[in-house]
Image 1: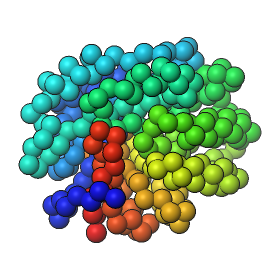
Image 2: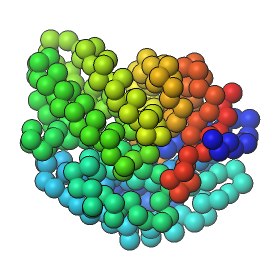
Image 3: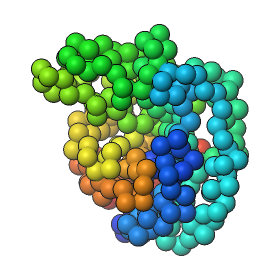
Image 4: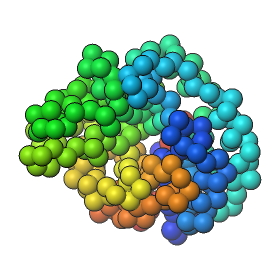
Length: 276
């Protein structure tokens, strides 16, 4: 375990998006400045690379030239005494095409890869979970069943460092017959977390710009009980105003769940920063 000595209060945001993402508008430099203004010590830009677009159409490329240009323009923020900017990627369903995923992940400046699932499986149409049918509890359960099958394929792959927003579909589920939870999926969650731990991977606490912080405590405690150590915190910010939102509260959750370190990454290698 590589341990880093840092300042008394260390805060990192390892999930954010710039104009390189299809749903981002702001330069990396603007996001980095916002992170510094928010009192963060480290920001990782994790722009989208999804192997299915929002409509389920296959995509197998990533614009590294655009990403590297943006990262270079933000050079002022790369290695300051009080702040670091890291280059990451949020990789959606990379297991759909391992050779293409391998090529994308071979970028030598890449620090960190979030593995995510934003879409139903190709067999279910491949649309983004944002657009799926959640009109009934049964429809929600079917979507979650598909989601966890895809997450298992992701967890078994080599193309991620940390599993992103494991509770992602719950953001959008509000059927008429009541709230949806992950009750009934405990065994599949355990299998997913065990697979990540076995492969030396981790999980993310995704605050969704401060909206879902408290939702993570049960899953964090279970991950810790299973032996999980690698954990990152991310705001999922797509605009400077949201960078770091919920991050201090998420660090409090880590401590409450028994974690002594948060994880940061350098060239895909985890490093552990004390938080206690």
